[in-house]
Image 1 (cartoon, rainbow, N blue to C red):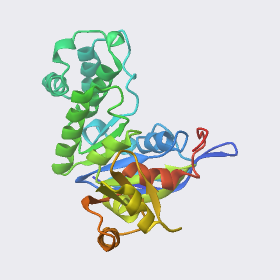
Image 2 (cartoon, rainbow, N blue to C red; image 1 turned 135 degrees about the horizontal axis):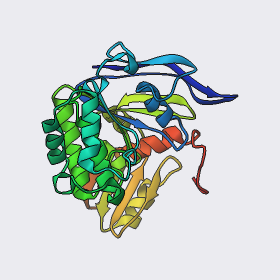
Image 3 (tube, rainbow, N blue to C red; image 1 turned 180 degrees about the horizontal axis):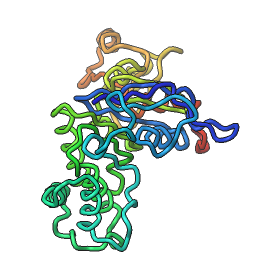
Image 4 (cartoon, rainbow, N blue to C red; image 1 turned 180 degrees about the vertical axis):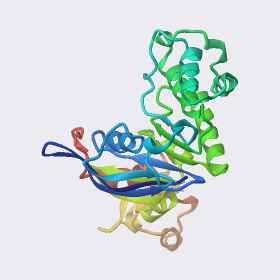
Length: 302
């Protein structure tokens, strides 16, 4: 099932939360949704599942609005608030109540409790759950109808390393099965391991919609060089177009020259290189460059 966001605009008075936002989330891959705080991610995700009504434009799931599905949980599973469950309910009762609204058998509740590692705390009240346990419960609720589309807002927030790895494996499996997986996250290093494609929003407008590889390979590259004579090499290649940094002894990171140019320069003055490694731009590098002018709440020095 494809998610299509078409010219979506949400305005509060004279302030736009999102403005003319359009993008498509395709099945069979994990799509990450990135943006600074206040950029419009939550408004967009809430609009997709009908929790916010756009001022104009629309969001469709397989050509229909979320509200038009008679049994939406069997089409779309969503985690938008890990604290949505009432604190006085047990995990099992919370899921049973959701299942009852869609005629989902109680046996399916047991399955998702087991899949999310919550079987041992199924009879425990949600109010006593840690943030990570709450996240697992939210994911269990999203999986309850065995949907073909997953929409998850910060699904690894609060999870321990084992939980993060579990979510990564789960989402990869769901995408491999041909499902549509759309998630937001501020953990860019983790998202780079999960996602195949990213949509980046800033100040309510889309500023990138691209495969991750295109972002990380298309940016400025550096070369990592190891040599016992860093001073001589630095003097040999120094010019206005070259930037040289050093984070540890015998290591240089060089911007502005290719590996071949560095190797040639070193050979000309008999400098031995024991490492010469091209460094790809990270997702974080690409994200920071793209959102530099779209951060509403920037820290000093950014």
